[in-house]
Amino acid sequence: MATADFLPPFMFLLLISIFRTTLSTNSPNITTDQSALLALKSHITHDPHNLLATNWSTSTSVCSWIGVTCGSRHHRVIALDLSSMDLTGTIPSQLGNLSFLVSLNIRQNSFHGSLPTELTNLHRLKHLDFGNNSFGGEIPTWFGYFTKLERLYLFMNNFTGVIPSTFGNLSKLETLSMHDNNLKGYVPSSIFNISSLEQILLGDNNLFGHLSSNMFDYLPRLYQLDLRRCQLGRIPMSLFKCKNLNILDLVDNHLEGTVPLEISNLTSLKYFSIGRNNLSGKIPSIIGNKCSYNDLKGPIPQGKQFDTFTNDSYIGNLGLCGLPLSKGCDNDAETPTKLDRDDDDDDEIN
Image (cartoon, rainbow, N blue to C red; front, side, top):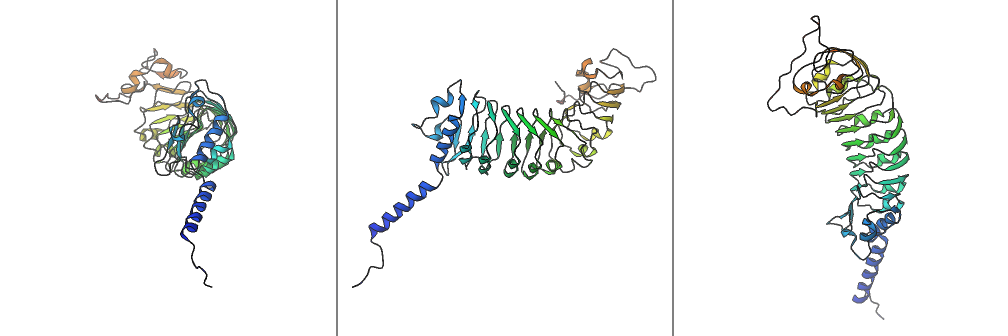
């Protein structure tokens, strides 16, 4: 009796159907994304505008939900933007199942609590914005796992502890914003090895310690640096290698000595704030309008942006003289630097 060495066509099709069903059941899909978002919705305790309550419904496609963007290729959720919706709640672990997520933005809400470790599954993230919420606890070291991350916003929360050194693993990072938290300790040197960084915003924390002299050697693209109230002590000379620097805020840092003349190398600088430090000496012609409460001396430069500054810009510097101050310079004082005003000058500080 001969035996069949092949499956009948209907049996073959049945097996293929079962395989596809099993694969669909076990593999993440848009249903997985829907469950993750519904879990987030269930963790929202206050939705004053009923944005999620009325819009996130199983009767409509996830991809049409407010704040949700799906990709055209895999039809999975690739972006979630719930910014400025006045939401209150916590982040559920299921949010880590949005494995195709590239951008997550919940800025300016009232999310609180800690961040679940399951978020480490979001290995495609390029943009992460938790700014202006009420998250607390230490910043997780696993943020360093987001190796594709380009923009990280954690500002204006209640984070405590130190800045994780694992941030140095974020080799593609362009913006690091963690100002206005309760962070303490030293600024990890590993951060300053990320050559792609354009913005470093760490002001208004409890950071301290001197920055090493070569700290800014590897930041050619840096254009904004906010280290206000970080108790740094001295300005590292390597900072003046950052030729693209546009905004520099070093207010209230216990800075000592004179303002380095090398600051004139920063020809792109439009805003430079060094108020409430212990600096002495003369005002370089490139300096900004925020130099109050130091020990600066000599004539105030004239022309360009200096013509727009008021007395308040120089308060607390008893050795300064010349306009806009009422104190004139005596005959022994050096003639103030006069800067020509270009017709197309747009570098004034408002």
